[in-house]
Length: 92
Length: 267
Image (cartoon, rainbow over all chains, first blue to last red; front, side, top):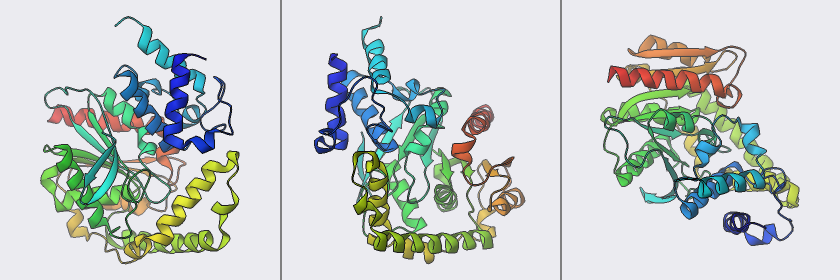
């Protein structure tokens, strides 16, 4: 498990509560909407916490640019982790 | 940044855009619709294009909605206007802002443009009926629809039967809707609402963009804007009803950013 994946899981527990996530195994293929049943407003809260954690280069609004709502709701944990990793390890 | 207290209420707020906005760059505030809606509907649709256009963007959950505090009372449109003014004060926003409102959010935005014209640079009304008999009928229909929904939620207890993992989202939405409809004055406040008079609508002096679905029950509201507002552009989207924000997101993005760019040129 990558450090970023660990961090995304930790932040998820802040947003939706630890009790709920106890029943779910989170992998890169896990989707926020169908698998985790995250509400759209909770995904916004998750995005904000990721930006607080990793800085302004992790910009969720930019990440979802060009996606429609169905695309956004189908985002996987792996896609988000990949984006964060790209933004935090690339040239500054 | 996410939580801000204003007008005695704790609001969930998202502020997007450049840390140091360019001189004269617009500030755009998005105001969402009623009950099942929250700031995410604009966050996922028009907020990004507004940021790309150079705007500072403010999104907030109205009281009782999304992640904002659910107060027991004060859900009238005037309370919504007072909330928004207090929120802008707390955020230190003193320049006139562009208000973009969807459905009920448009009603709040239009009322604010009448009540505090100095604070509003422009209005985008998406599927909102703001004045006259059409608006009165909308308030009555909405109060009746929500009353029926409230009874259903109270007696069916859908939310209590849906606590499996796959149904968490539906259960949570039902729980929140039940708390808002059966635990606050929202429906009573809607039922007692007074729409703007046409003469008040005509007092709106800022540029207005109205966007409506061709098959919407609110088509008359588009005519009202054309008739009564001096600087007005109305777009009717073919084949759509009330859900233009979700169903025609791309078209709406183009219309909105084009209109906003013209304001910048004019300014």
